[in-house]
Image (cartoon, rainbow, N blue to C red):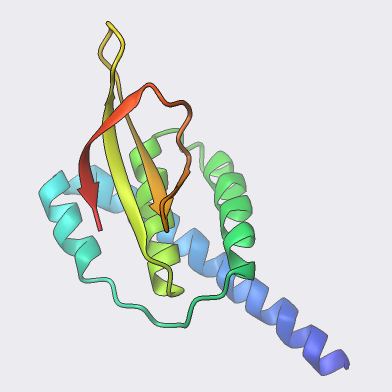
Length: 132
């Protein structure tokens, strides 16, 4: 019984380290590459594990905490990091980039998994670009 719990903690620590690595990779990609180059790099990411729905909550929770720790407020950087983490775990995430449909211009990016939107602040944004 103790071995089983230990493996659970070990797998959580490994997942947490991978999330941190993906956040740092997203920072580098966002800083040095164009959106087209980022898209090409993200399309090359391969699934390494099978989908585990219980890890979805864990990923979003720790991604939010780690991005606060690294002082990351840019929504595209967060989406790239989440895309990397989710894709490697077997999910089919999509990065959506949209513009505000109100009078003043602003843009936002959010992530979708199986039609559900995450990190989308409100519904005032219309999607104009999608990365699968």
